[in-house]
Length: 408
Ligand SMILES: [Zn+2]
Image 1 (spheres, rainbow, N blue to C red):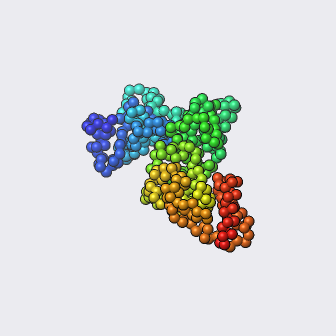
Image 2: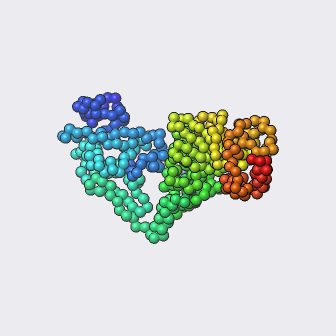
Image 3: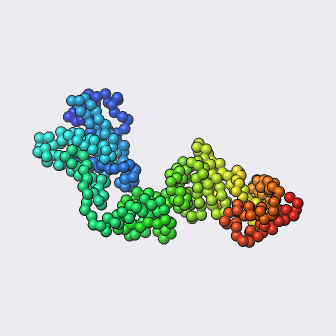
């Protein structure tokens, strides 16, 4: 569309001749109205990245400006838009459309219709270059009014339809609802997936839990895995997404880590993520410069087969310094193996090991007991669920008793 040698009667030629191109053109793509024959104007509401057509054809979209020269007022207007050459479409926000359609119409009229047909027919033809489908929904139609702006009219819909439409809307507003699907296919989506807009109200289903019998949507799989791992911490959903994004965790790596549903996530702060994986708890901290530190819960060996986890953390040694590696490390971590590789001898009294070292002073910190029961009760409260199984608890109590008989 932007020929190297513009025709001498074209807007581009005029622009190059009379305007200082260097000064007035931005470095990006710009077009003139007389170059837009055959293009369709598509106004949209909200953000471009939320539009289905954009998501499906992202690579064909190009940020651009429509230049409109008003030679009488000696003014150049630049209308921000996105052009998809492959689809011959020009996307612009509803606001910009309403603001500039009168001027754009006039320019197109001058170059294509002036003198050929009646003004009314010309305007109808020009308005015909606009696709308003993104501005319409089940409850309203859209048209271009006499003031060159988009006007809406309510659609009459029956009550049952109304009820189902509002059911969909309120499910999407409901914080407890996290996943949605269409009853007629086999996919599940994160509630914020752009595909959700495509699901008809009569076909709409929603769920608090991730349905196990459905395929994961390819567009929102990251969101699905993350949302499934964060319980109801929806307000900080963006933090989680950004943490993995900044850490360059690929879809595949994220799926491998979160896909089993084994990991539970909790953002401690915007740059610190707590990961509960099987029995263990980890703290991953980003320094904002692409480096990560990893801390691991302390644990106390009860014997050479069992341990209990305390509420404190120690800095983990020998972990990969980048996030995808850390996730793999956590996923593959097995404390049994950890001990075996360190060749640790079973001890009759409890010790605290990590990488073969004493990593916490939990036992040393034990203060003199008021009563044995008080202490065991206090410790019982710090035990994570997985470890509070009866058998382990009994062994642990025996251990505590031995500890105090031993004169500590
Ligand atoms: Zn989806």
